[in-house]
Length: 311
Image (tube, rainbow, N blue to C red; front, side, top):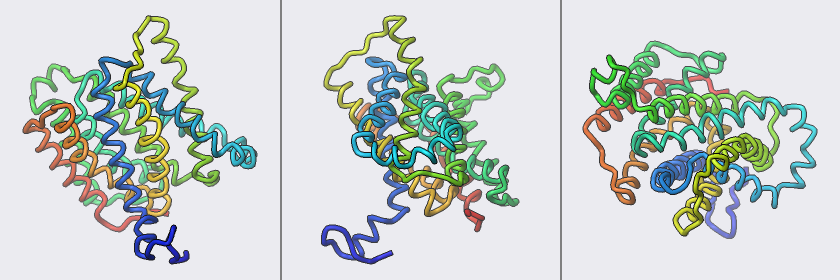
């Protein structure tokens, strides 16, 4: 790769802008802000339809620039169509839509902390498909991370566990984390991928189509969908930043770093979301959030700390 930097900048600046580490971090930053926005407007606008704007809106924006590429790469897309359908289910539906819907029952901080489990889940799934190895250190880390998530989901109250009195939003977030982890591993494993922007166009387009039944349901029951300044800015943000920009950046990180190292940037999701939620919507961290986060971070550090096979 040439050291010539873009737009007359220094070579060091060019290398920084191409860094997969910076890309993965910024992807998580945009996703963290996304949690806060969805939580802020969920009482005004149905999260499932906001998620449709995220994927369908992103697809329309992308097609304005990538339609020639989609036509040129259509034979590859057609050959792998059902693989891409599965990936669209894992990311836009079981991953992103589920986390949007969960915000109706739980807080943004819980969403971020529970999804900090994703790096550990990536290791488990990568091990199951033979992409990586899991040793004793990784197993200890996974157990610690699961204990941390368990503490948050149960609110550190054994009565919640014995009475099965879980917050449904937290359970949905756990399922969402599995979907996002599976997508991370699958993206690394698939043998044929179009160019990044064409792949993202296909992913967003399929994801948008899968959201249509939720739109029809909300219309059928007469759910209000107001277009005011707050909801309009929210739609614009979710259509551009956590979809177009974040996924392009995160896919780049997966390609360059491997699934486990890229997923490890989910460490930053909890502090980013907690800070934004405190500043903008007044959420507070409780003591079990802090303890659970520490256990998750320690567990994921142990689980992803040793050298693993990423290719």
